[in-house]
Length: 208
Image 1: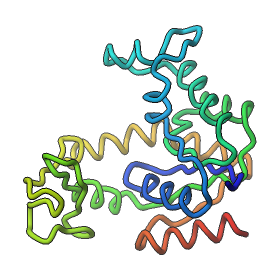
Image 2: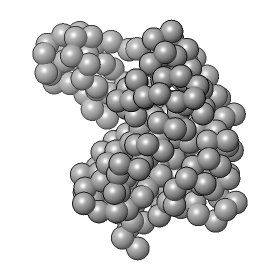
Image 3: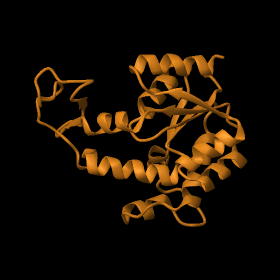
Image 4: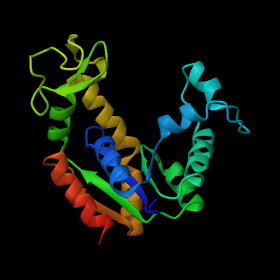
């Protein structure tokens, strides 16, 4: 297993999940996301309670609990791609104290491209397979290739919701990007182009 420690940053729709999976496969790394770490450690006791208590109540898990869970996940990994954390400056400062990162990569994509990507997503109502009206169409329009069920647009993929998600991202997470940029550790990679193009750019960073 490789011991690369990579933080992948970028707005919703930048392709972080896709590229994280490819990086983990290419370099034999653990893919650590906040959601997965919380689900896998729902019962982990912290001084603020367990993540499950907040999740079951439909509440946001507080930063101190998220921090402890993520650090526990990082400690178990020789190498990792961290995706979806840190989401704010406090988390970024906590992460700096707890682990050394080899690469902090920001996937840069213009907002109009993000909106096009996110609003064009269609999801199978039965099996959850993902498609896109432009980039990844099913063989038959509106029908899932995998199971034949209807494809739908999720509520959080409408333009109004997408623009609100991007606004929240700018407010909370863009300061994290600036934090790493000011620190001099940020590498910016274009998230435009095909997934193969983007991955080649990421590989150049990791192997440089």
